[in-house]
Length: 436
Image (cartoon, rainbow, N blue to C red; front, side, top):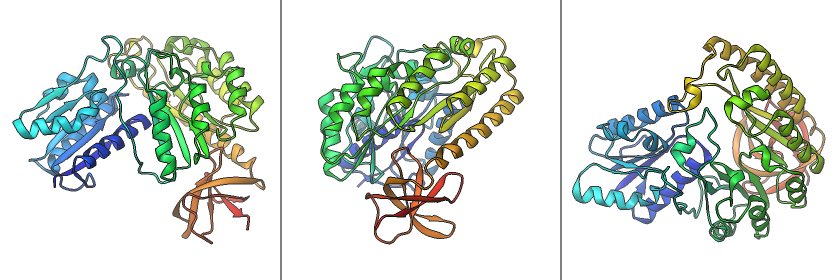
């Protein structure tokens, strides 16, 4: 039996695809081993969102080669798609699989074993609209929550982003296939589903469907208790969208709305399709129809041309919206994007200073959000046994994604329990006193 090891880099969509490739290998008779062990085949699902991601992808490919000089090393995904010539010339790589070709992994391995010849299967992903690549999951590495890829590609072309060139145009998964997969996972005991995609808000734009209808249909599946959504563009959050979601009790009031900047001038240079005021309106709709929803976001600091006044406008806007969590990124040039050649690139030391300020703001706002729930009764889906301050405790999350822990009075893995949040054990964890 041949041994295979996989390593994932990048986003939740990549993680889903890596798990799907692992299942394909298992079904083909491969034994899956940890990446650190000697294997016959190494598969690295690469990332290319930044120049650093490219570098990490190359490092992992070379690490795989060093683990076993005789192994087959497969480079799959976004780095291969954006740097095909570079990857093809790399002696550490035996097989190149671009995006929309990962479903051919086993076939590509069979061909290599038969011919012992380096191969590349990389479609020009930007020539027209490709069909959706069908990958499926029967189970996931997590025991309670399953990420479901429902969409691929992006049509936005933000000036800092390489993803449309790496993933191609928007293409949506068939509704029936999504529901079949969710149904199978529900039968295996998964209670929480996270719908994800490269540009989730555009689900159905190419096939007459829409994200709201998808959520409504997933909501009907027995066994699923919670539905979370991946990153959303604020434009999809209309009053109707928020109102319709609010009548679906399985939908968690936890929404990640991508922002990047709170300054209109910066947003325009980024080629984002909204203003700060429009973003604020979307947040208002969610707060109108959900009680104290968890709003999270992404922010880029030091984008080319960002002045002190523009940064100050962003910081003030973030405080005004008052997010639960913020992911702060210092702008990093990505070769092949418009932003990489813009004038007035911001010095690294200024980006670092601005980032530090926003991280402190994020920490304060996050603590204030969690404090709201102290003393309240919440429902938690427990996931695993963990160590907290030297004690074994079960950890899980509320519907708003506040991490909580409870004393292990009984096995709690993949169980829903209600209780009172009694005290903060750290900046991120609350202890819950379970109802008897």
